[in-house]
Amino acid sequence: MAVVSMGTLEIAIDIATYLAMSVDGFSPHQSWGLGSLAIPELTPAEVRFEPMGFDYSSGVGYRYLDSETWPTTYDESSGWLCVGDVTASRAFVITTGTALSIEDGVMTAIWLLPEMTR
Image (cartoon, rainbow, N blue to C red; front, side, top):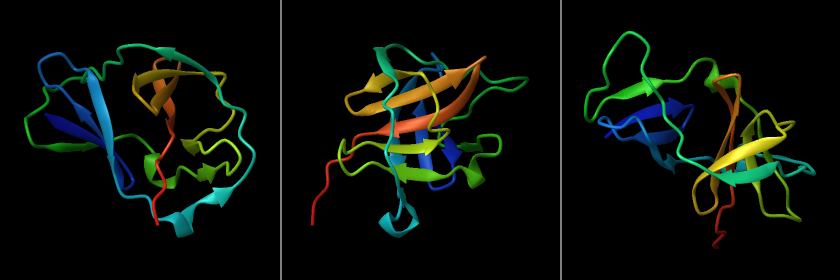
């Protein structure tokens, strides 16, 4: 496995198939903005992060574009959390409660349905 990092979140990538396997990491609640989200059309799919001009190495992390500045929005009524562009019209579900929005081959948002505990 390799990881593609977006701020403090990471997408686990299978280095043999380039498939996105899961999203993990830390997203402090204090950094979330509250808002009403229009949940995009959610389609189960395999999402591949094919490297451009290099090969993934197991255990290595790779930073994803300008993702350090992606906003995080939480919708209390639906329970969904969006990291990135909240205007996406569709997202691809890679695991239960985890979806990625991709426009023209570029990931624009991560959608998460976190299980809240106190």
